[in-house]
Amino acid sequence: MIEAGVYPNEFTSVKLLGVCSFLGLGMGYGKVLHAQLIRFVVEMNLVLKTAIVDMYAKCEWVEDAIKVREAVNALVDMELSGILPNNFTYASLLNASSSVLSLELGEQFHSRVIMLFRGIALPNVISWTSLIAGFAEHGLVEESFWLFAEMQAAEVQPNSFTLSTILGNLLLTKKLHGHIIKSKADIDMAVGNALVDAYAGGGMTDEAWAVIGMMNHRDIITNTTLAARLNQQGDHQMALKVITHICNDEVKMDEFSLASFISAAAGLGTMETGKLLHCYSFKSGFGRCNLASNSLVHLYSKCGSMFNACRAFKDITEPDTVSWNVLISGLASNGHISEALSAFDDMRLARVKLDSFTFLSLIFACSQGSLLNLGLDYFYSMEKTYHITPKLDHHVCLVDLLSRGGRLEEAMGVIETMPFKPDSVIYKTLLNACNAHGNVPPEEDMARRCIVELDPCDPAIYLLLASLYDNAGLSVFSDKILKLMRERGLRSRPRQCWMEVKSKIYLFSGREKIGKNEINEKLEFLITEIKNKGYPYQENEDKLYHSEQLALVFGVLSVPTSAPIRKNKNSLICTHCHSFIMLVTQFVDREIIVRDRKRFHFFKDGQCSCRGH
Ligand SMILES: [Zn+2]
Ligand SMILES: [Zn+2]
Image (cartoon, rainbow, N blue to C red):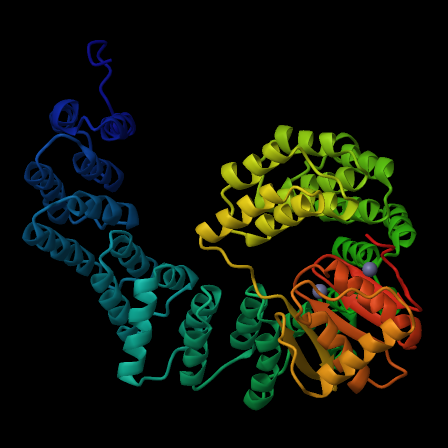
């Protein structure tokens, strides 16, 4: 190019420097290029200088000292020319120093970078944030923290990028928190809210509460952030407690906080609390907002009351995609399969946009209703007709559909050929379906895949496989699997069952030892009654009462006879408890609704709505 008499301008130079920098050729071609730039008196602007610094910083196989010297030269050059740096410059300069072994040299370099920053007359929030981010990125927590403190002292308000820089780094978060405690200063609301979000989002709830306690002023964002994060962690009970704080702080609930609380009540399946929130929503005029209304439909479906859910849906003036999705999945998980499918037809007629969740609910509905071919049609129409690419969740549903229909080979084929790495959920789905239908997959093959290839830390898989082999009379395999589970140090998650009585939540956990109290006595009485009436009752294998049995008796004793007994479980209901509840409802005239991890069971007059699914 030069031979042809065309000289490089600043654009060509930046490109060439970029190549040298990328290939780490700084000390060879890079230096020649730098010299050429000086020779052809290319005008040195900020972009060009940054590129030079970057090139020297990235060159490999060169002693650190030389590398830094070159970078420092570029820095000095920049200082002399009076060009103000931007955030890319800082990043490049700091890159140069980050690989330096000598601490002393590094420190000198950092202070020069800061000096360069001081050259800016009145740095705005963007300049401050660039420098803070540059230091934080290179692990210079101390420096970036003090710069942040200095920025606040200079009364420059941090923006969301500054806060996310600080709070994206756990060390910095803790340092900021510690500083606030020490200085006893009032926390700026934006900083406080961001701290709450960072702690609660990382599962450090105690720290989040501590920050809230220190804030003199809290707004609705503080509370909504906390409630939403607690919901994400599955701590719905704690999320509901945030309501008390809102009342104490005398701040007004908005639709976002209301939706968070309603979804907390839905997570717990607590109808009474949910109804109170529904009243509040109505009185405060949130009925017109889809966010709150959609969460109400979700709430009632999760409480097993589709009557109320449908009513809440009808109250929505303009149902959107989420409204329809919530309705369809609610109907499906409550066992109203044909209603779910006709709601889908209505959704299409209303010309509401379908999304991947719509199909997830549809395929789930078909699988629950044993509608194998229809389910397959929906699955394959997703991509073909609606141009929605099926995700892993859809494949899990497909495996469920096929294996429930007894087409195990095809289900395993889906796992093998799908464009995703199979996770433990998909194997659990397959095993659960096999268990329910007494199908045993090729034993060696299955065990190898689930336990060896997947190396799961989910004990449920081991237990499922073991019980599958036990039922098939292959106890050698099941012993092997349980041994492996113990060797890997895995223990099963405690099974819990809970219910709400008079707005209070009662928890029944694990398998309780048989003892003497009102609940146990009543339970024994019921079991004797079952036996006396000649029904086939089998003792639990482990001679312990299951949490469902205890919760059932507690419900019979404490819920008014006219109301249904609603229970929630964090795992699937076991076959033993399922048949126990069916037997009890033969002679105790109560409606019992159990929501397990997957679906609802409505027990009445010795029958269950799931028909043994
Ligand atoms: Zn049980
Ligand atoms: Zn059932």
